[in-house]
Image (tube, rainbow, N blue to C red; front, side, top):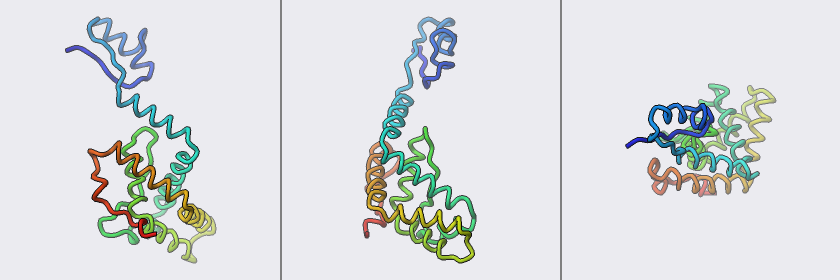
Length: 178
């Protein structure tokens, strides 16, 4: 069997000077097929970036991660608020959907605990005004119904994509208690 498949940048898939052309020059039977996984990822990324709610939710998840990871004090507060086996907030990736799924899963499962950690940090008088404002902004977003709904929707969507990697049905979210 002869073939080649990789993502779609011109230096790889270019028919004149890309790797595809160089391999094809050595073996005319080595057909190139664009990577289906990469193509699906590009479609998903494009679709997600065309929806205002999705972009807003991604920015929220990034802001949440950045807030806690900017300080060991804040990170420790987050870890203390989570259960023993709790999942801390995760960083997003524009191209890796499993990283996006991990970020959404952490917030979905520990919504109330994360909000509690934010409230504890904001109530600490030793924090700067900037930290308090940023934390209060994140709390306000978490109190908005739309934000909670978007987390649930994205969790369900990403559960379909990541089904083999996660057994989402066995996990119980805490913010269902709202």
